[in-house]
Length: 331
Image (cartoon, rainbow, N blue to C red):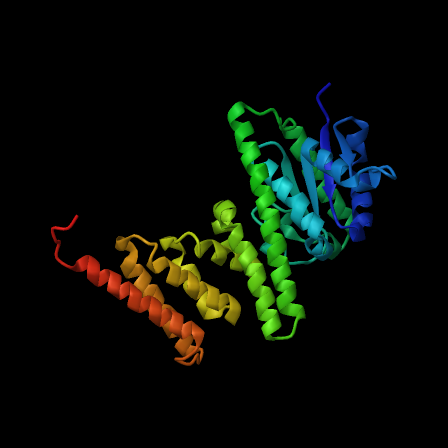
């Protein structure tokens, strides 16, 4: 007989009733041995729950994300489980289907590029008949497993190397996001003060210490809706200058809070001594645009941000002038 699809439910415990209800609609597929299901309520008392969840995540052929506001707010679901699911999806080892239970900002999530069900991304609770909504979801799952075989996790030596790299990157990503959340909580919960600024500075320093390991995540972090993750991208750009990232830094100067704004400006300053001479015109333009943004925001000429930009411009103009001088006969 064909191998049954192993289904893993990723969900918030507040949505357990939806998981149970969907399981009822999938019962015919279980009875025909076309699927088997697993969720964390099957963990035995006293068992290592984290180890079991990890093993089932790695063994699953199909991961169902039961999406709601509580799911998106769950650090474990939205962090560990989704990251593992998307990493395996990228390697072709698993299928991932988001199922929209309730209205929420799923479009801002890391899985927003995936096809979400029910049809037309209409949340289950918004249907006139929930029975019709669950039937629609069950039919989409039936269609998937009827038209294809379970993905294989058998890896070649090259894909095994890729797996190890992806697993290592997942660890780095998790640590970066931990610092990002810590920054956001610090900014939100502590009143403006020197103590808050110092604490955020410590967190930023920890982000910078990961710059070498987190560089492959630069584009992902820069495009993130999370202010803390965008700050982590700035930390990378204070260690690795990147001409393609200049518009991103300028945009932060335009729109972000002063702390992030200041470090984006410091990244522009770092780029002065790090970018290739062919990229100096773009960098000079970026500095001028950042200065204009500060002026529009009413930042006085004696603020730290304005001073850093002025120093960066002077240093860059000096470098440009020295490189434009006639060639000498020097060793």
